[in-house]
Structure formats: C-alpha cells, structure tokens
Image 1 (cartoon, rainbow, N blue to C red):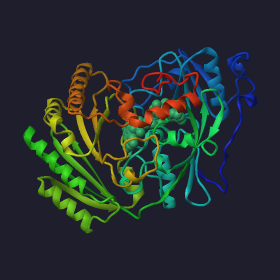
Image 2 (tube, rainbow, N blue to C red):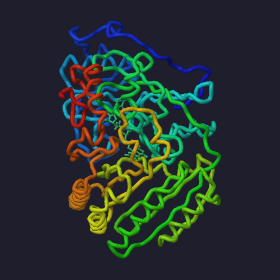
Image 3 (tube, rainbow, N blue to C red):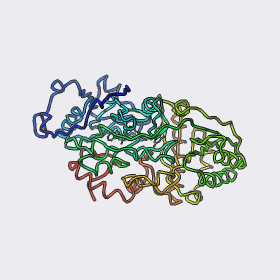
Length: 471
Ligand SMILES: Cc1cc2nc3c(=O)[nH]c(=O)nc-3n(C[C@H](O)[C@H](O)[C@H](O)COP(=O)(O)OP(=O)(O)OC[C@H]3O[C@@H](n4cnc5c(N)ncnc54)[C@H](O)[C@@H]3O)c2cc1C
C-alpha cells in the first residue's frame, strides 16, 4: 500500500513495557486475550502453513509460533510472549534471506509482512517506511514523483532486511548504499522496549549494516531520497567462451575496464556454463563519452553488444525486477575484492565448476564510488570496489541436480577461501562461512557485541550467525 500524506501517518513513539499491560513475569496472555493486531499462529495450523514459506523454497525451518504483527504494540507483545516462554526469536520482513535467517527451528518468528505502509514526506525528500515494504513498492511510489531511494533491483526483496545489511544496486556507486540514506530508525528491543535512533545514536550506527535479526525488531525507517535521474541508459554484452583460460582472460579484462568506470556507471559480469555477459547501466547517456568508451572496451575484449537503450527510470528499473515467485536455490557471497588479484588463484576453479553444470552462476558487481564515502557504520566493506556472488538454481524435485550444484558451489566457496577471500556481504550469507563474524562485520563486530548487551541482554534474538553476547 502506498500513499503520499500531508503529514506522516505515524510518528516516533516511545513507551516502555509498563504501557503495554503485561511484562516479563506477568501472567502469559492466552491467544484469545491478544488483540487484533497480533495473531499467534501455532505450528500445525492452516494459517501457519500459509505463512511459513519464504522466497527460497530450499529452506525447511519450522518455528513453533509465527507471530503476525500489525503494529509496534503487537511486536512488543510478541517479544514478551517469547521472553516468557524462553523461546528464541527471528524476524521476518520481505522473507528473501538466502538461508532463512528470517525463520528458526522451534522458536517464535515475528512476521511483519502486514506492516507495509510507506510515504514520501511533504518536503518531497524524506521517505518513511514500515519494515515489510518491498523494493518494487518503493520504486513505484518514488520514481513517478521524481525521487529515488538507491536500493537493490528485485521487486520482492524487503526494504528492511536489505537496509539493515547494507543494500546496494544500480545506483549505489553514484549515491551510496541504501543504509547510507537511513536517517532514523525505531526498534523494539529484546525486552520489548521501543527505542529510537533520535535518542540513541548507536542504534542508527548498528542499523546501517549490522541490524539484521541481531538485537531487536526494526519497526520504522526514515530515509532521505535523491532526485531521480531523467533516464537510465543500459547496454548488454555477451560472449560464448570456448575454454577456461579464455574465460579467465575475460575476467581479468573485465576488472581492468570496471575499475576505471566513473561513479554513474554500474556494471555486472555474469558467468555461467555457456559463457559470459556484462550488463552496464548508467545515468549518463549511452551516447556520451564515458559510456561509449566503456562500451568500446567491452567490444574490444571480444564481447558482442546486444544493443543499448535509454529509457525513463521506472521502465528501466522494472526490467530488473526479477522473479517474485519462490524457488529453490543456493546463493551466497563470493566475497569482496579489490580486483582480479584477489581471485586470481581461484579463477580457473570457478570457471571449471561453472562449466560442469547448467544452473550455476558466478556474478561480479561493481561497488566503490560513493559507497566509499558513506558514514561510519556497522557496514564494514566500504573499501572494496567489487562484490562476487555465487548462485545455483534448479527445478523443484531435481534432487540429484541439487546435490551436484551444491557440491559445485562448495568447490567455488573453498577455492575462494583458499585464495584468501575472507570478507563477505551480510545480505548474501552462507551457513558454511568460517569466521562469519569477521567476514560480515570485520572490526565492527566488537561494537555490535556491546550493543547486543545493551539492546538484547537476555539473547532473545539468537540462532545461527546472530551477533553473540559472548566475547
Ligand atoms: C532475489 C533476490 C535479489 C536480491 N537482490 C539484492 C540486491 O540487488 N542488493 C542487495 O543489497 N541485496 C539483494 N538481495 C539480498 C537481500 O538484501 C537480503 O536477502 C535481505 O536480507 C532481504 O531482506 P528481506 O526483508 O526480504 O528478508 P528477510 O528474510 O525477511 O530478512 C533477512 C534478514 O534480516 C532480518 N530482518 C528482516 N526484517 C527485520 C526487521 N524489521 N528488524 C530486524 N531484523 C530484520 C531477518 O531476521 C534476517 O536476518 C537479494 C536477495 C534475493 C533473494
């Protein structure tokens, strides 16, 4: 649901557990006592079965209760409910976590999917959003009003999870990450208290890249937006590659060209079992010197242009919306790099794995640009201009193919690890990353642990790859 209002529909609220009517130690509410803004769906019920699915159908976690929340109050109540029963809590907004970090086994899932209002503020710059607003909805509200929140491409991804882990996309090099545009955030802590970054600056620091499911529930986001570009230019190039060494040479050349791109140009290299493609998008005209130069360089590298275009932003963004129906897959970060030297030792192994099986993709995206100049925050990877992603897709029921693809992605992951790639994007998690604390958060991890003690001292938000209280 989207709306443009004369004043925000809701304001920052601050109240303690005392206002809510029951706290830890009070008699536990029965299902019937809970008001309409909270549904507790027990495992085994039809409503639970309808709510438990997430985008990656290869995730099979089974919580005990899904707490469907429709208000901040309801989130506080759900937290008390879990606290009183000693159950761990996971938080779900858009449900696009690769590994199901929005679910848990035998705990409570705070499901925010019905908290999905968003508004452009009367100043035409500020944008406020509930947690379960999706990226498609953000673009569709803002772009017709000539505003842009730089974010990811796929329409179904949740703004909450994306922002709390960083958030990059076609416009990040020019304007910075989604989390760099976050100016204020309201959380419900592990004790059910509503806290706001206006009162506690640490909260904003943590929410910009370190807030996914670690210490509380983000219930409201306040962003600044950018002026939308008048158009977006794009060009796609393809190459069919005959051998491993030819592909590795193209990778080297890709890094050389991409390193020199100006901030308004984004490019992605996509390798699969058949060959390579490059997508280049820009707020510069495709006829301008910077775009034309890069285009000529990709063609000189042996790639064939599939044609260029220049269209208004809404039309362009929709081209990259991707699939919204759930599917089985195994995707994870291929690591942050400075350049080809960081993956030189793994490159042949990556290409060999790709050639072994259809359904595998290795993608390298350009970061850098204004990301490097963003605010100091829990996002720990500003210095890296490239991000790799390993992807594997199969059809439901293809269990043997799944096994082969999983084995191939494991080979790629281990090859990258052996080459020294150790920093990974929090929003592209793998349960197999060793030293995930350092991989996702680097030097920020110790401050996140201190904040965990402050916001969630009883470790309600616990589970795999959550910031730990133990130092
Ligand atoms: C198809 C697809 C395309 C993608 N494209 C991009 C892209 O272009 N750019 C990019 O940067 N990333 C991209 N991602 C990764 C994406 O940013 C993460 O998967 C992100 O975490 C999804 O957020 P969500 O709200 O949809 O997910 P969820 O699964 O609901 O949550 C993901 C994580 O965030 C936590 N979380 C969610 N909501 C809250 C909340 N309100 N408070 C506290 N914690 C919360 C969850 O507990 C979980 O740990 C993509 C993912 C997919 C599947």
